[in-house]
Length: 322
Ligand code: PHB
Ligand code: FE
Image 1 (cartoon, rainbow, N blue to C red):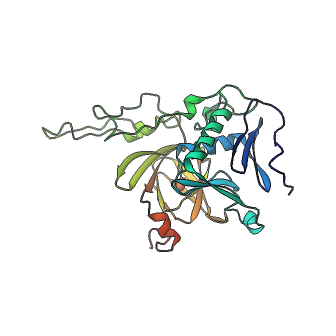
Image 2 (image 1 turned 135 degrees about the horizontal axis):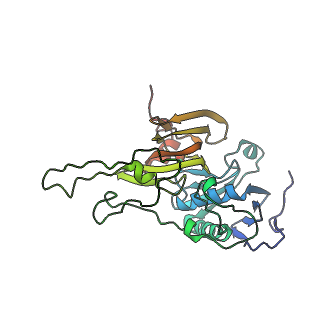
Image 3 (image 1 turned 135 degrees about the vertical axis):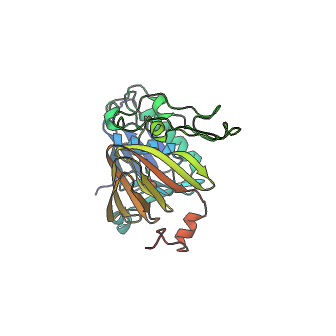
């Protein structure tokens, strides 16, 4: 492998895109690729995969634990600071001491990532959309798509559909979820409780989401967060969680690749069909494939003491023993 000094640009043609830098990292884009240079080497990713991963890392505030954009590049969230790394969880990079890590204040890295996402996303491309529901990201700079990348997160105060609270979605049900029951539930409240008893069709609400692989918190009880999402094609990142997380497959099917969190060595394939529930251990990474639009609930535990307790071995990486 040849290495380059970060002083020499990876992209010499002017295509209208800016170069974005932080610490020893430099990011450049051309028609098809994101080029990443860092002290000791260079890396590249297809621009579509790069923008989809970048969009998730930005939207999720660096998420829980590790967000692997591919087998080499990614971030580790330390909740206030964040590591940006090359090869940190790649056995070959680690084995030949070719990995590179820098730690940043989360807000500083976010600023650079926000600017890069805005600058590099062309007007036709929506990094949150399924590949079949968006235009292409390729070519020289062509406009921007702020509407797609600055979506407001929808959060209900108490519950969707209550007076004064978040309303029902009125955009169409996704083309691939049109076979779901969307009938409204009947509500029979005792007199005097009409304002306190409420129900709505959850499938109908989630099925109208126009984004993929983007869990939103639909209920929160202390540290227990239910995050519903519609999935299609490929989860753009390989998530290495720092705690256990549960998946509830609500409709259709997702196939998961499970690999060791540190080395990336394959560990399992998990096929989840509608109604299946699985726990993802705290020491793995997972990436999902959804052949058809499906609904998934991700159940996260927001207790901030968990990463340390798993690291110390105080908690087993899996939640149950049979
Ligand atoms: C996950 O990494 O657990 C994850 C992320 C986004 C999704 C689903 C699952 O849409
Ligand atoms: Fe996950």
